[in-house]
Length: 344
Image 1: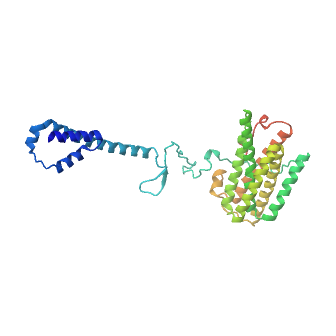
Image 2: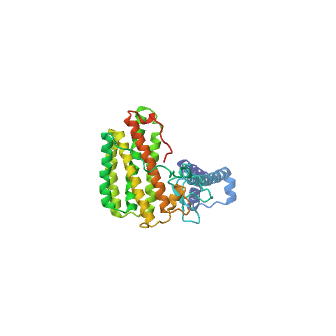
Image 3: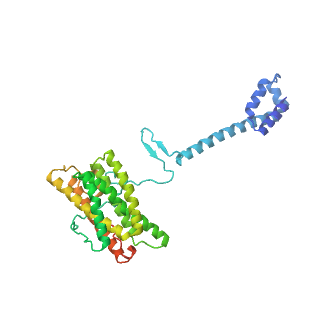
């Protein structure tokens, strides 16, 4: 009987089953009663083999369970889940699977830096001493065409916004942030095609686009756009982007000249904005927090201070684009002249 039991256990092990479960089932179903001493005396090696098989099966099961637990814990530590909740709080913690963690950034006073769209080393103090009255007098046919085009574009803007300079500025910035991006993108592609440096102009134009976008983010904090104004932004941006893209491909010198005149109009619009603030027609509200940090303004800065630094930025963009157009009018490439990097 013991030999039959041992053989059955071995066959079961070879087939991949559980020895302990099979031994129990065989023992329960057997009608032969054997005394324990006799069992040991008749075939003690078989019983020893059965006990060994049971212990081996138990260890195998425990080992597989432990291995699965370790693998699960390892996957969790490596970021198997994209996000997981912190214990004791409802906040979501981004997984560190890719090893990308933002460093602890603080202000000068030690408080945490609240912005993800720009860092402290990207902030600056605007040069408000720049000459706001400079004007490129159109002499050539192309200059006159650019000047007249900008004047025509201002007519529908004046009709639609009238003296709502906050809404006008918001719309203006959605357009003004396009040329730098288009020019930087096309110069970037040109650099890749021709295996040549850009002379820093890619960065200069993209910095201009980013600066104009920050103007927009500031104006959105001050002016809550209505649904029809948002719709107008979509239409204007869709038309202007494609038109300027084609124009830059055909004549970059004309494109930069138009942008230079657009910036001159922006200076005029922001000057009218400041006049209404000074006269009391527009309330001089506290400056948004994003503007205070971006332009390093005093903590008690007001709307007047924000418009002043934005106007100074527009004057710098005016100079950069007229300068770029002059380079192209001389028959030279932009890379032949040093790019005004950091010139806001």
